[in-house]
Length: 122
Image 1: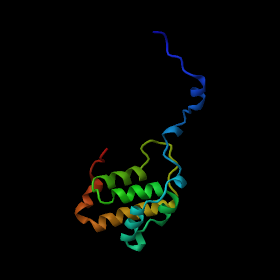
Image 2: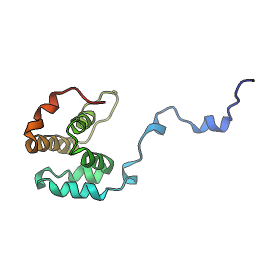
Image 3: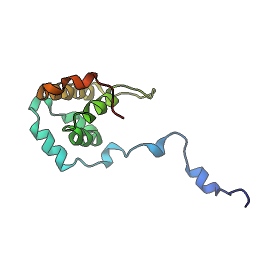
Image 4: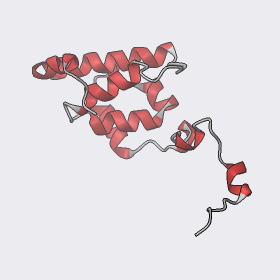
């Protein structure tokens, strides 16, 4: 059996900038009804209005993980700490909402407040 031939058209369509691994653009992700319901359960001062408007994918994930004590802290840490290097970071308003959500979660679940100091779950 000889070497495998790769169609050059396939090569020209591939990019090495990581874009094929990126998730869909924020405007392509719909806000899920479960996320809207989750937001309505939060006190008004903790509702992530800017996150919902700008990053619905993140809002959907926060809503899905809100009731999973080991998963939510890890996800928030992944959002707040650049472990891959080179990330641009979030706008200040988004950062405030992420920190506010973390504080809200700890306030609502004081028995889980030590979760923030546990090692991250992968």
